[in-house]
Length: 173
Length: 173
Image (cartoon, rainbow over all chains, first blue to last red; front, side, top):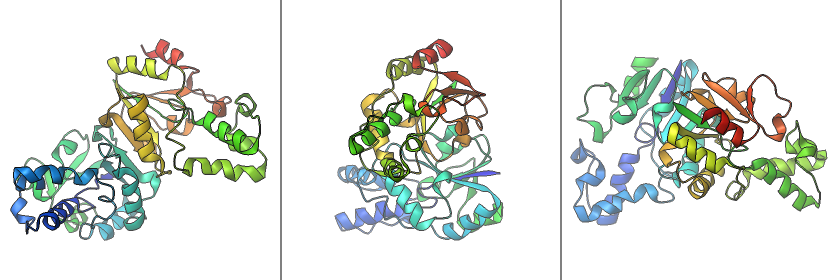
């Protein structure tokens, strides 16, 4: 069985990084909870939105992201049972590509380069299961689609959902 | 119809770049013809092989590759008729990832980021046609597989073959 796992907001805590950089830059105290149902840039005054939209285009941003809780332990176990690929729709941000590779080397070394995919659109993926936080990736996937909870997708319906990696373990291990 | 097109030795002339760098470094006059049926590193004295094997790990190598004859014109026409993706098994060389993106921006701007794939193993691709110079990529593809001629695959049998982009045009346009 082939299992595809998204990277940003599933393995790497991109969402929190946006908040942390914003709070640091503007001396604010924005929290994840205040952002439920929205992208981070939608939670700040309009004149500051462009600043947040530049994060992902900045060298270093994808290099130092935090790790989503329990993702390492559970994915390592899943990797014994499934053919696991990490698949990130990252081509929009050419600066991110090498940083994502290095980040995986550091935190998910059991996913070798043969099992890594950087793409623009995930509907070209052929496999059995996709875990992703974006409904537009899941809805074109022909296998089992699991929506991984992120603040921005709190109000998204119509998908099998996992709130944590422990829930992923319950479903798939 | 979804058409996947490999990058190295199909769009980008990686093979010639290996020869050119080798000749320049060692004052040699190695030609493509002398390499038929082999990788470039297999055509040089053993003590120089490691030098060639380092090319792909060197920053700048993938940035300045030549363009395979007629690939731009034919692929632009194919792009009108098919859903064209460029798919490169590049994850082994993290240094190459951003350079490949920039190279495509320069030479194939009609293939936007949404239609670019960098991966380790191509058997996860779901689509109708794959053009590639590597038999190990083609043999696991479930659609129509077309072997694009490169010096190293001159002796490879068992695949539909295209020697040039004009032959690709004849087949697919």
